[in-house]
Length: 385
Image 1 (cartoon, rainbow, N blue to C red):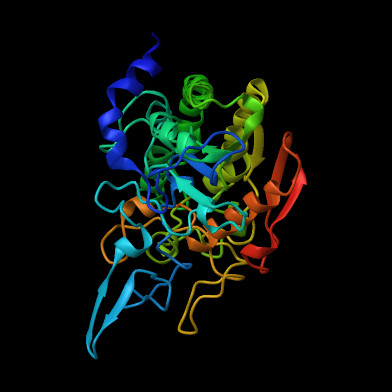
Image 2 (spheres, helix red, strand yellow):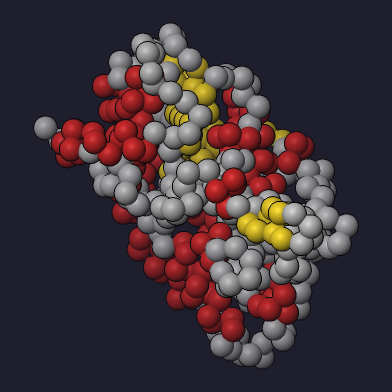
């Protein structure tokens, strides 16, 4: 008995407590081609919906934050509060932060159930065989979903946390804030070797995640051709250095922009790090015969701090011109620190549109989804790639 099978048996009691909102297994006998149709997402914060609370970014830290804070609620004439449970239903307590606009939910794919099993912070082990944040491994959670639905597509976003993506952000932020523009202490020189070192193990984890998903679906009676398995990459949350609207001298990038990176580090992240991760995920997808959807350029022109985007003011947010990624925050006056550099509500809707466009294509192949700057989430373009 392999470790995945042992884990699936051992966490059976946990599965009942982690059934996602919006669907039920009661009285249902489903199988491939029979039962309520469904699509499912598994993975980490980029697909769970972390930062889905926000419609763009506002420098106003009070009340509705110029309409950007979707958790804001007015109560009576003078009272107000923030209902984070409305945007992260059922997952505020454990921090999985599955948002109501996560890509698996905000798409317009015509199925009966849209089920989000992804969890913010998850590494590949949380897909394969390790309980995480009080929930069973996601591949184990997938079993009752597959048994109660006709699962037609599974979308997987994983690997970034295995590479220490959040540690890279922290390191780059610290090195920006502790060195002068005349003598910038760049993080790319330190971080690139660490990424190169971590990449083989991270991609082995993605490979194991695909195997675990396939094993679960086989146990539920599916063949590999009964459903579509799509591996997705990550959009860049920041633009290239010369595309940032705040000067790298002074502290505006740190205190106002929420993009505390030296130009060279931002360009490295946009043109080297994100493509490197995407290319490696593409290779794993190809080796496993899954579909691949490349998001590397999905936010071009709408990244946080981009010259082409607009910081939301008193006129309220506009999805066409707003930033689609959450800034690097402090977790004090506006939301949670964990939301930093994740797709916000507009970004998640854009990725959801990409899933719709992919759904409309024949199964198989490798695709890229790109943004049309200043046109909004509904104007994403899918192309072979």
